Image 1: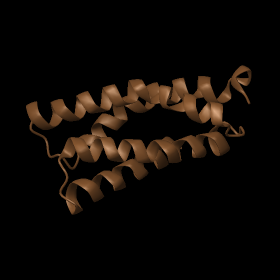
Image 2: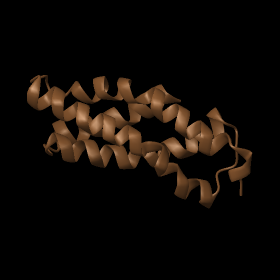
Image 3: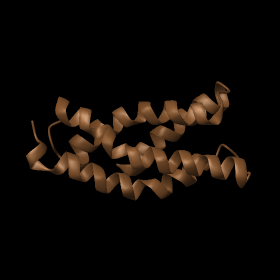
Image 4: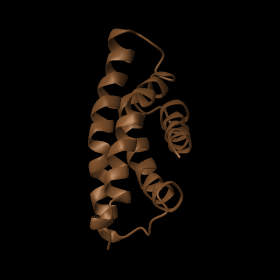
Length: 116
């Protein structure tokens, strides 16, 4: 599901950044928030085969704290300091953050003690 989540995020990012001409950081944050909701349901149903609950939905953003810190920092560094094209920096940053997000989301979504 990580590749689907990343693809959704990146398509949203391109929509905001390229087509709507938002600043790259605003495009990143908006795309991140929207794709996180989709990620919750994809991970619940397909990755961990668990019933999504309100409690899990409210806890799920915790899985993305590390992700948003890593990706936002990496996008800034890659765009502003390394001077890479803002169209590709989100993909590079996401590749770094995916393993961290997977491990944390597994703990929240697959942990039976958190259910309902």
